[in-house]
Image (cartoon, rainbow, N blue to C red; front, top):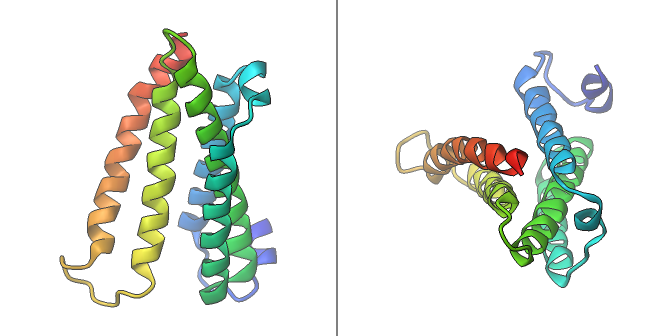
Length: 157
């Protein structure tokens, strides 16, 4: 309901898939938060800021060609996912015997593929197999299956 109130330029059809994606991003963030501990959440490194700058750049690009409110919401969630996953990856790689870095790496790959998917969907118009959008979508779906075993390993610690 909040989506339909904020995004006023939406067509008369209700986009359940858009809300589904938003909720899945939020779920992924909550999963990241629940797996991390206090020391990891307090950890800071320069790579976090570089990753955040990249996501802000992409968000500004998406805003320039699409919906303002929707792209701000998605950009904010992607910024949070990227910030937490880069922080967690760097922190967990420094810890000996930790498997949580695999989960954070899977989230980094997911966010990178999601941005590649969006970037390839804007300029390419055709619906043929030569469209990079299809191939990136296949990789994105595969990356979701890679997140599952990494979550199990991270939760077992």
